[in-house]
Length: 277
Ligand SMILES: NC(=O)C1=CN([C@@H]2O[C@H](COP(=O)(O)OP(=O)(O)OC[C@H]3O[C@@H](n4cnc5c(N)ncnc54)[C@H](OP(=O)(O)O)[C@@H]3O)[C@@H](O)[C@H]2O)C=CC1
Ligand SMILES: O=C(O)[C@@H]1CCC=N1
Image 1 (tube, helix red, strand yellow):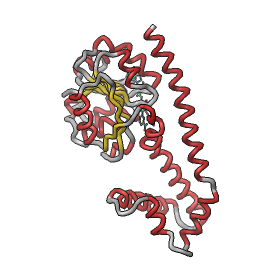
Image 2 (cartoon, helix red, strand yellow):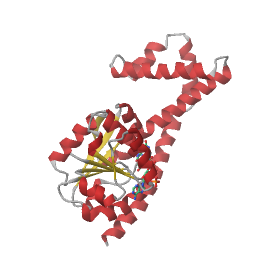
Image 3 (cartoon, helix red, strand yellow):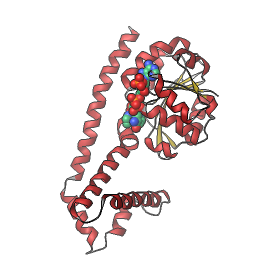
Image 4 (tube, helix red, strand yellow):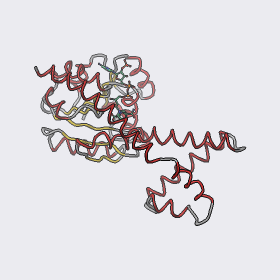
């Protein structure tokens, strides 16, 4: 199987690296292209057996499975360019949330999949969210599940929970590293610890906590209960969190991402409706 990757920005690069490092596919069986071709060339310096294609249509013709890794508004123009090169036997995968598999299916004749990755997939960990198009064949469904199992846990989701699932899986690493950064900064400004040590301690704590969850030793509530000794010090900190309207903050985050999502969906709807006129 030959894989084509359109767009080697942030996520296209991470996906390529993860597929190679996770031994999902050999370097030589991946072709990459990018609007600014230097970016694709940089990736080839790391993985010399990758194939570079300057012509997007040629990349599509030689690939069985094509990942579209551009930003949402760049997807429709790319689809318009490649649709006549795609055949029923191929499979097209979009990695962005505001474009549905149904929309992809209105433009291209092949199997369509949406696979929303997470930066955690770079460490061959975390979740990759999958939604299959109506016309996606069982063969391609199995290929996708098998392939993504090399870089994380594929989880099939319903279209209607796309945004919230993506908030948790894909935006989550940004949200929680932001909070961790604030935790470290406060430790440094309130005490005598230096930033380097505070960062190392916090990172190792986070990794350790992840292992506890992975090994299913504790659930999140159990973890809190075990650490919060009655009348002890952790409880003082938890009291501060409880008084800080944390729930409100997270509700606001989900509202903000969903509002942005709705705005993007409207712009994209116009692109696709115009196409189908
Ligand atoms: N960041 C994340 O954690 C996640 C991102 N996503 C999704 O991934 C997608 C990409 O995001 P991200 O990688 O951060 O964005 P980037 O801007 O880093 O990458 C997009 C790339 O697409 C290239 N591109 C645009 N148009 C074309 C074209 N016509 N032909 C070839 N290449 C093209 C751009 O080229 P150029 O260099 O010229 O700009 C750029 O390198 C988004 O839709 C996002 O929603 C999904 C899950 C997680
Ligand atoms: O399309 C998405 O939902 C992803 C999540 C992080 C950035 N983009």
